[in-house]
Image (cartoon, rainbow, N blue to C red; front, side, top):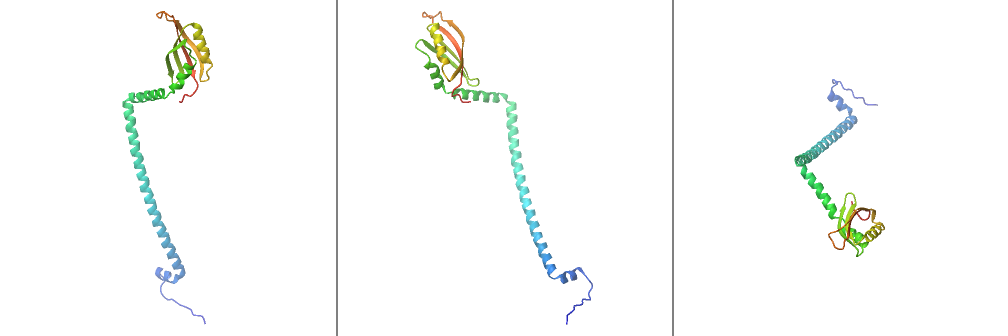
Length: 184
């Protein structure tokens, strides 16, 4: 014979939950885990939010510092010009002078004397002032310079006889572009 349970009490929520049995246990455990996961997610999002707020505060401080520097530069434009001038001076000082002097001295003879050498780092243009005993030595020096691989486009700009010197040397100015070894 089969046993039948008859319950004559009024149906209530409590009564329904008690009679649910294993289904109630499963649902209650699921609700508990969902609650724990929700709490963990909320804690993680809170931590993430506070971390982002800290990063935003740091970025705002850096932005403020950069704006202050920008205001100082705008108030003092000569500081920017001074910085640019210092960069050009450093580039001029970093020019490999020994290589440059050797290139021009190697083609000079006892008949040609270098007086002045002015390189421009930004354009690679070199202006040279020299003296030669006569025009033949001057032209020979120019031809020798044209044979150098580190120098291109050698041009005679100006020449004149130095009448104040008893030997009457020819003072001349040339310009050339230096193609070798210059670091920009």
